[in-house]
Image 1 (cartoon, rainbow, N blue to C red):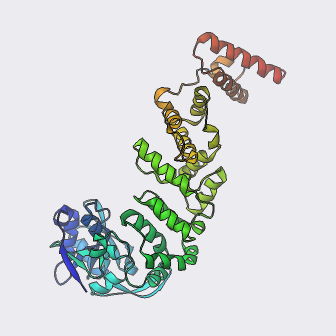
Image 2: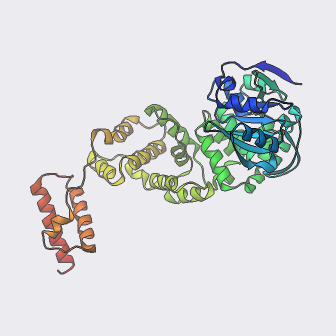
Image 3: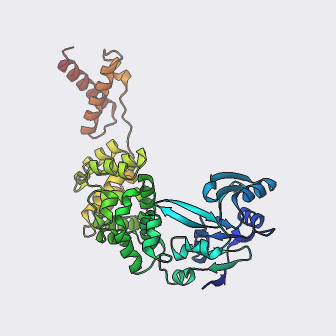
Length: 418
């Protein structure tokens, strides 16, 4: 049964590039509506995000109309009815109404049509099956309005069938539940995800990584992760031990520090105990090199940060730099658990604010003046001198620096029989 309502307070629907594209396709015998997440978010008073449009016009007609209106078109998925239109620099994914004739994994054979109900029924969740026309009328063919009012994430139709069409929907179920759901997971959907978990092996690392990053920063990420663990879904995703209690602590630490949710910090808390975990996750989730380096640094002897005195902490900060130091302290703090006294950790993580990292003052010229030639030996000398400078407590007085340079030069000459 189709229900309707009116969408208010959505300025992008009545003016700007989205309204322009919608008007272009909603004329001369064709109909167009904004579909999916933008409608859901507008009803929840959230930013619209990507604005996707569905239309009865076939792709060739979409391209023709865009050309006449001098709007750029990109055939991003034209075989499946999708054309991206770029209006005023903003991209809009435009897809012709369709229904799946045959599905296998993430691929499907589709037929174009003009039936809005059939098009809605092929989508994943009821809250994503809503559409709105240019007049602001919301069309609900799948019960999305009622589910959105109850903040319930529910598959459209048979959950097992929806999942078999695309196993990524298992991860999307937990991600959308974490972002938009309240209370217990939809039982039918949860059990279907458990039954279909073997299909996760068909998904690419990129797709799994993308969903996990989005899930981890969602409002109810912890509840979703625990449900995934309890349903036997987390192990095949991470291929390693998970630590939900550490994730809970990391989320609370972010809150205490007034930080925005950070996917990599949360992933480190959930799944990194040693550096080998970082490399495994990098491959499994196809992380960027910078993300892998961040997780690797977090996992490198984080346990040594507990109970440090100020002088030792300064040396750690100097070696790691402000960002890596902060990341590692965050993991060590989370590993200490929510029952740990936060005073020590708050003091430690504030070290960069009260102690500016000094610059090593000795230069190659200081050792050239002591009779050494340019070459690889100078790099070794500087490294030895830097270690001695750290051990001495970062002195800046010229006599202390001279003594360090003299002692380092003499030691190097003695060890190398110069």
